[in-house]
Amino acid sequence: MGSTRLPGKVLIDIQGKPLLEHVMDRVGMTRLIDRIVIATTVNEKDKAVIEFAKNLSIPYYVGSEDDVLDRFYQAARKFGANIIVRITPDCPMIDPHVIDEVIERYLKGDYDYVANTLKRTYPDGLDVEVFSYKALEKAWKEARWFSEREHVTPYIWKNPDKFRLSTVESEVNLSHLRWTVDEESDLQFVREVYRHIYKEGDIFYMEDVLNLLAKHPELKQINQGIATNEGYAKSLREDKIVR
Image (tube, rainbow, N blue to C red; front, side):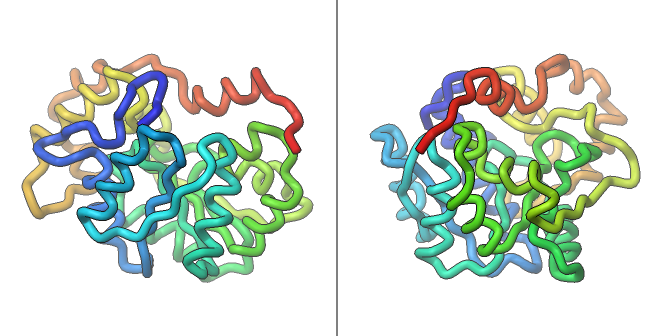
């Protein structure tokens, strides 16, 4: 809820539902995820997220706001997770099929970490990371830079000598598309997509959005030109060693 660029964004309304509920609905349509947990923070503003989780009977963990790596590790410990699938809560168009594809790659290989973000070919906003509890624990013990702790997985994918990594890529490079919500223009774009193709109780997929954009290419102009991963870039600019 404490987003600086779009305050309160995770509970902002999209077609009659909080953004976060749309994320929950879409993650809930996967075949391979056993349990959904909301990992939120001790920030006073995030009490609204806790109430949201309680109202929908979704398990939750409350942890550090800045040390998100610790928050993930403690949540994984609390709920006994052997495999963690990381989905960020600002992705209301996350695709259940893409999530399952990344999980399947992880399950079929001898990997510590699999993602579709190591080489970006999917739209920004369809990000999926899958990693083992052991990899998470190792990162939690060894990561020292603030950027590694605020963004959870950099220590893992920056150290291919310590972790077995694999990437999932789209058949067509769609990395120029932006479907995440960080700015007001992102929210405007997502609301337009939902207005065109969302139906209550139904889920649309990446292909549905691509078809919509083919018919209405002007929609892509709404949030064009925003830098990808600006939050991580900011962390790098301000990076420091932390205990």
